[in-house]
Length: 306
Image (cartoon, rainbow, N blue to C red; front, top):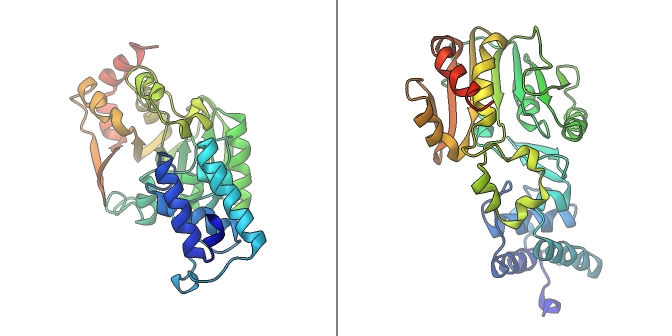
């Protein structure tokens, strides 16, 4: 059957059809079979991800066909995320190294970074920023790349993730402004203060984790699971952030579907839920003043589960 396939478009269509028939899950950088198949095919052919459609009818050699089909077969048979098969992922317009040492780069925060955090930071001055629970380093590195006057720290508890983050710092040539730090949330950041703290911590509930598609089993559990309500890490961040924020500092945290649980737990806290192009995505913003004003309630909620 595959002997009839000839062009780049043929193989993208074939890959997408195979992915759809296999019932694969799409949640790692891409949300549909065609985009995933496009990534795989272009990677196998050593072509740029933004290749002009004019090349879609270019014909593959026999060697190229085997390379493409091998990757398509692996995606179907192993349910491994595309980024782990190709070793690369795109985030905020930048290419990052990606493998099983950290979650595949993905977050609506990419839209904030590319938009200059407008309007949220329009009237604020940022010199130092922190990417907490950095994983592959994609958020913090993208912040540094899009804001050449910022100094950015990347912090994570996972030694493997930090190793990958260091590789991405070098890959994006931002080592002069980005520091990678081993830290269990804020524990390794004593004395450091930031104008902006951004975090995409684990926020998947135990029940949700047990029901995740097979693709997620290839990612480190450490980067996903966060207790019965998905808030184990978010509450610690809320409680500890004020001592690491400058006077006018801002905290931005992604909690995904755990948004509802957070609002129920802390109804008095004035969370600013950020709207993205596709709608609300479980990302909140708070400034230091609000964190301090509601510190007693936040600390009580955090201590209740420790």
